[in-house]
Image (tube, rainbow, N blue to C red; front, top):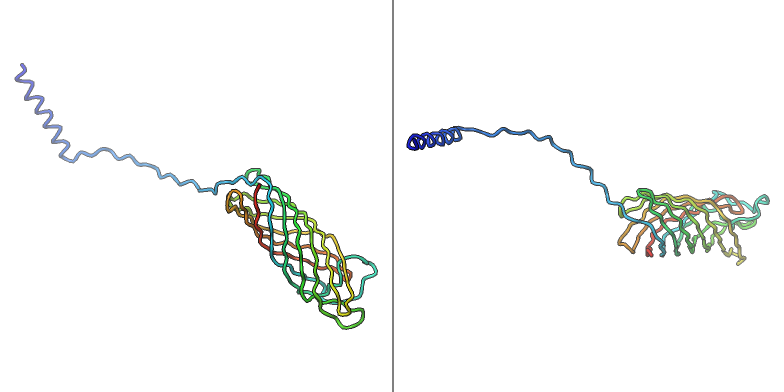
Length: 226
């Protein structure tokens, strides 16, 4: 009986081998393509205090005419009658940021020394003259930004207090100060966990004794995060 079974088993193995050699193929299972998930910039924690220095340029866009002191407005900045005076600006700042996820809010206090070169000034009935105005400005700002990882684009609103002094061609000193609302935009960049770089533009509309004038600043900053 065993002699009969062995040839039968061998025949079965040979038949299976032949079927395989004859082109048998396993069924192909179709796989649905999966769309890759969008890669989001990982959020950073911007929360914390910071302080540093800034430098840049200041510009003045004022009335395109010169006029004597306005009796209805005896206060304000000095006789700014120019439309295109520029100069350097530099100072320091301190601030605090709070990270709420994708939204980042903050406050910042800054101080700047300013110089407007070759402003046109009224000369009490005489010819208009040129002078350099030196001053300073203190600003308190609210920041609202978007956490884009190492970058933080933001909008800013705030209040500024400015004071300018200059001497006319008769060596008569002039001085004035004013407070104004301002707005602007900026971008901060986390160079490291402790070091932050930034760029910012802001404008403020001040009142002079001859009319309104826009004081605009644009600059770069470097801050240390505490």
